[in-house]
Image (cartoon, rainbow, N blue to C red; front, side):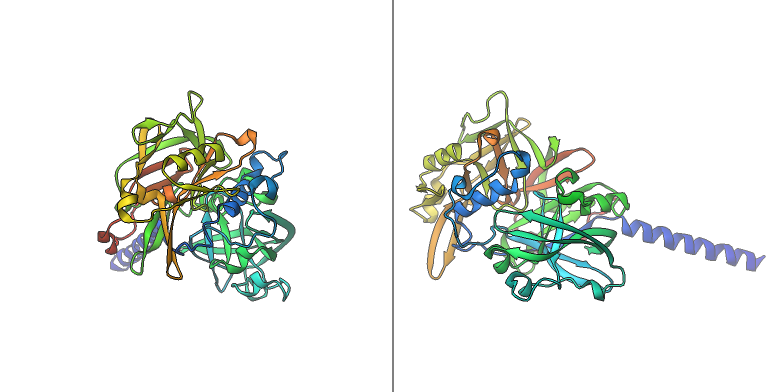
Length: 426
């Protein structure tokens, strides 16, 4: 009888341990992000113009963006405006990489060990070696992606992806054998992990987030971003949470805005305002906006954004839509009006501290507007990109189940140095 009871207890213990492992696997997973501070080279709006236009080319495939239309001099040397990136690993044993977690694209790619010796972007970054992975599966389909800041091409492979302790099996990704443009040569990240929808995935590769959901690696089909405005050794540059929301990173209610299509994380904007006055950009038909962690600034049609920047007192650099403030003193910046973005009837306020980027380099400082005018073609004339200037101000939740994006006031305080444990969903 004692032996039978002992055996039952052992079975119960094994069952409890299995359930415990299952619960731990489904808790929200946090990935720390690094932040690279802006330099004077980063804020070149002519370059960003072309990058944003090219990135959203797939919305209107019949319209081909040229560098001349975007206001970019041919041969312009610059590199990506993306600041925030974090760790992943591929293969068995794990091969580590730093990637941009980009909600404005859908593919995962990293440099390949098979890129030629004279490809400097490959040479300066971590490279994937399929020969060193026991879980590698060949695919071989070729791919090519144009980002505006540069292009990448190569072939598709398949392996185990590790992200924040989660192991994603059978993940397709691009092995880049060619990376053109100074963007990728000078970038501090190795590749890009897209978090937008499968409908815009190049070569129809299944995005990472889709595999995480289908393999039931998180309980909730939600991921969220907290981006730090001030890089700190203890806080890091930010944090992405997979499978949940970190309630320590925001304050007040969450406003959810439904998506208007499932390509990018795109939703309707009621209005934009300067101070207490509507800018009259949207009207009854409303504007559309995309929440994009892979773009630093807030971008919109050049005629509208240039007018806003002029009202703010910024000087528009001819030909490139770059807006610079002649006065960079704290008192002047504090005197500027707030800018509002109205979503579902709620005004999300951006103060001058939020939208003025103060950049120091080689002993000099410059204050640049966080609003970027882009020469969108007529079909895209009412589109806005809410990049990191907005997302660092408002904690952003990407809810795949609700088909909505949620926003709440981000906490940017020293008290966050003592970070709590990840939010538990069970």
